Length: 187
Image (cartoon, rainbow, N blue to C red; front, side, top):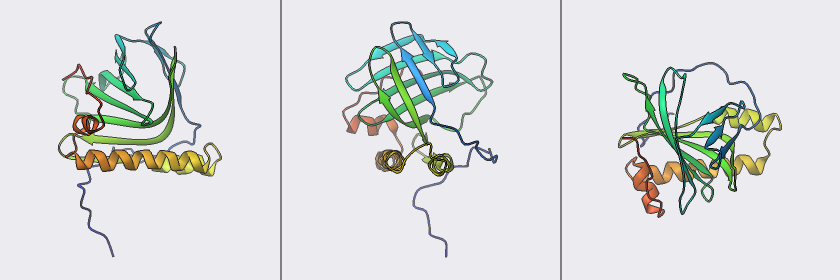
């Protein structure tokens, strides 16, 4: 028997391929150098970094990407999240308004995130979906993350799903309930 869903379920990404098992992705954020080093080691220019009471805000262009033109991220160490707002290229619908990565965040002169596989994609006022559970399980089976890390990732994802759903699928509204002001410059 199939259970009824009370949360609307948006369409999947449309990517049916199996994910390659990979270790957690590490990314670096260097406010002094105004750079962001992605998990593949590519160093990108950052337009703005700003430390907030709850974390680190970053805004940068996305050069050479066919769909994404610019994005902003807020690293939240206490929540273990990276909340991002992306702007698509002209005529591109990205299928979400916010992309929330479940991560471990280390602050310092150079901030670092370790991706814990799970992502929550939110369409403001409409719905959300959790992605990459399959990657988390595959990484755990392969010994790339332990049970406590997988549990931490799942607890964080559940926190986001519950909070954002209760806020009417409004990420900024949910952040406000936690005392975090929305830092976004992109509209």
